[in-house]
Length: 536
Image (tube, rainbow, N blue to C red):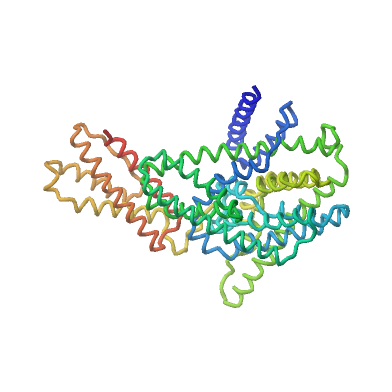
C-alpha cells in the first residue's frame, strides 16, 4: 500500500509541476523560480508528507539525464571559443567563493569547525546546470553570455565537489594537505574526461549501428547513467563524465542519426527533462519544511529558528552573490579591458556583460544533494542544509525573477548577436540550403521521369520560391498516386542535398551550432513528413 501512496504523491507532484509551469508561462516568469516557490507553498500550506530527499538518488537518478540533455545541445564551437572565461568561473570563481564563504561563516559563527565552513562554501559555490538551463533559454541575452553561463554550469560541479569531499574527510579524519587535494582533483578530472570520452565513443558507434529509433532513444538515456556510474566506479568525476559524453554524442549526432530518430530523441528528452526538472524544484521547495522543523526543535514555523541559523544563512547568501560579482569584475572584465586597451580593441566582456555574468549565478539540485550528503554525525548538519536552502531560494527566485528585467534595463533586447560576426544569419544559411536542393532538382534527368516531368518542374518552382522568399514551404497534394509518390521521393532527395550543404557550411565554420540545430530541425521535420507520406 505504501508504494501506491508514493505513486499517488508522485502523480500529484507532476500535476503541480504542470500547473505551476502553466502559471509561469502565463505570466512570463522563470519556471524554476515558480516551481520552487510553489513547492514551498505546498509544503507549508498542506499536510503533505515531509519529503526525505536521498542525495544518492538525486545524484544517480536525476542528475545524469539532466546533465546529458544540457551537454547534448551545447554549442561546442562557441564553448571551445569561450574556454578562458568558462574555466575562470568554473575553477577560479568556485575556489574564491568557497574561501570567502568559509571565512565569513567562521566569523559569523566561531563554533563551526573550519572544515564545516569549507564544506558549506564548496556546497554553495558552483552554479547549477539544471537551474541555468531552466532560466537562460528564454532570456534576452547575447549568445556569448549564454554560452559562458551554460558552459560554466556544466563543468564547475567537479571543482566544488572535490573541495567538498576533502572538507568532509577533514571533518572526520583531520587535516588534508593541499597537495593531496590538487592531485585528487587532477585525477578526478582526467578519469572523468577519459571515461566520458569512451562512453560517448561507444554510444556513437551503437547509435550508428541501430536502425530502430526507439532503441536509439533508450540508448541515449542508458549512456547518461552509464557515463556517470562508470566515472564514479573508476574513481573519477561522474559529473564530468556525463558532460563529456553528452558533448561528444551531441557533436556527432548530425552525421549518425536520421531525421526520424533525431525527432523522436528530441521529443522524448524534452518531456523527460520537463518531468525531472519539475520534480527536482518542487521537491526542493516541499522538503524545506522538514529542515525547518528539525532546526526549530519540533515547531512548525520558521520564526522559531535560532538567531545563529538566520545569521549564517543570511551571511552565506550575501557572500555567494558578492563574491561572484567581485570575481567577474576583477578576474574577467578588468584583465580583458586592460588587454583590449593595450591592443587598441574593444573588450570582449564589457560592463553590461560582466553585470549579467555576476548576477546569473543560480544554485540548485547539486548543491542540495551535497548538503544532504553531509555526515549525520555533524552537529550543525541541519544548519548547513538550511543555509544551502537559503542560497538556492534567493539565487533561483530573486536573481531568476530579476535577471530578465536587468538584461532589458542595461540594454539587451534579445538580439541574436550575429550581426557583424563571421557567421551567416539563419536566413542566409537557409537560403543556401534551399539553393543546394534546387540545384539537385535541376540536375534530374527528365528522360527518366517516365512522363512525370511536371512533378520535377513543380518542385523546382517551389524551391525557387523558397530561395527567393526564405519563408514559403507550402506543398500542394497530388490527385494521382503515381504522381504523388514520384514527387515525394524526389522531395526526399532534395532534403538530403540541402542537409549535406548545411553540414558543409558548419564544417567550414560559416554558421554556428545554433543555426545548424535550427535549420537541421526544419529539414528533419520535412524529411519525416515526406517519409510518412511515402510509407507502406
